[in-house]
Amino acid sequence: MSYATFSYLRHYLWHTVWQWVQRKHPKTGLRKIYRQYCGRRSWWASENRELLDPITVGTTRYRNRGMAIPTPWDTPG
Image (cartoon, rainbow, N blue to C red; front, side):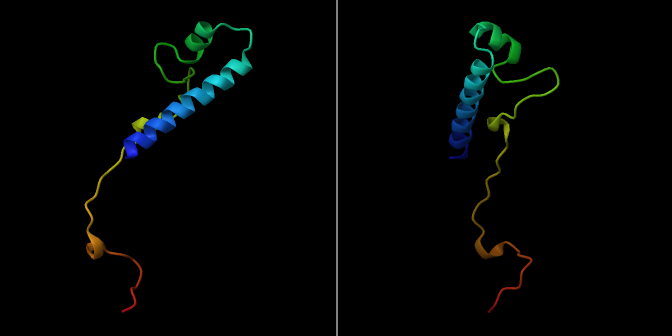
């Protein structure tokens, strides 16, 4: 489930940035824009920065432990 969500977020983010860059450079060809901002990769980057790729965010799955998880709060009871 989380992979599908991050994948959708990556797709949305890539196309949103692509539309913004096209508006920023209206008279520049698409290949030139792509080479300038993406280079050989398929993700947005500049010389010293790279846009966070949501798919690279790690997720950890935990089995449901219920009340076995310690909490720092006092429980009434």
